[in-house]
Amino acid sequence: MNFNSNNPFLSNKRFSSNANSRTEQVHQAQIIDYNQDMTVSGTINKTAILFLILCGAAMVTWWMAFNQMNVMIPAMGGAIVGLILVVISAFKPQYSPYLAPGYAFFEGLFIGGISAIFEAMYPGIVINAVGATLVTFLVCLGLYKFKIVKVTEQFKSVVIAATLAIATYYLISWLFSMFTSFTPVHYGNSMMSIGISVFVIIIAALNLFLDFDLIEKGAQQRMPKFMEWYGAMGLMITLVWLYIEFLRLLSKLSKK
Image 1: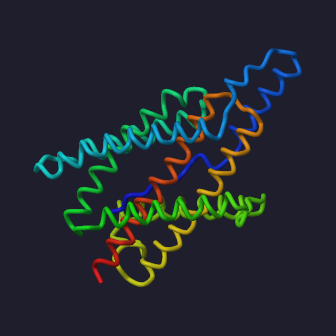
Image 2 (image 1 turned 60 degrees about the vertical axis):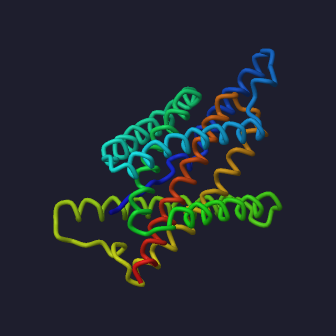
């Protein structure tokens, strides 16, 4: 099985455009209510809310799977609806306060179902994937907070280019496997396949730095309050992608 997720919130164009909008308001001498500005703490709170929603929805399909119910329909349906909500939010970030919770719920259905399937095949894999994702998040957060890793324009360009390359590779591989007998090299548990998974995990982790930077810059530029939901949603997308990639890597290693 090939379950992939990529973060479409990499570009800071949405943040820049909303920052410009706020600047125009200042030039027009409108009164600014600082309670309506984006903050880092507000984004953290929104991220926690989305995480709880995702976990709650994941428990639903997890329970269904271990009670011998078919979880593929709600899981795949959740993945499709979640993707649609992400696309809409990417173009209409002002709707993020409504779209982000919806994304968390439907993506939770997907995560719960897929996790249950992997857990049935490889007992103990889910807790290991969750632990690996959490540790990676904390390490990246620490490296960013203490300025050990600095998000420069060159850093952004490299990470975005690598992410787009991965997305393109996955898409082409999926199309070829759908219509031909071609087997992508990242399938199976060969050393090449494991190496690709490790590389993708590294790129996914580097995307966390971009998320942290966008959230921090957004707060500094005092962007509208709804951008907290947008930033939290982008961070959740990266974490979901990272978790899925850890599941895939650990499943390959379990076959050895």
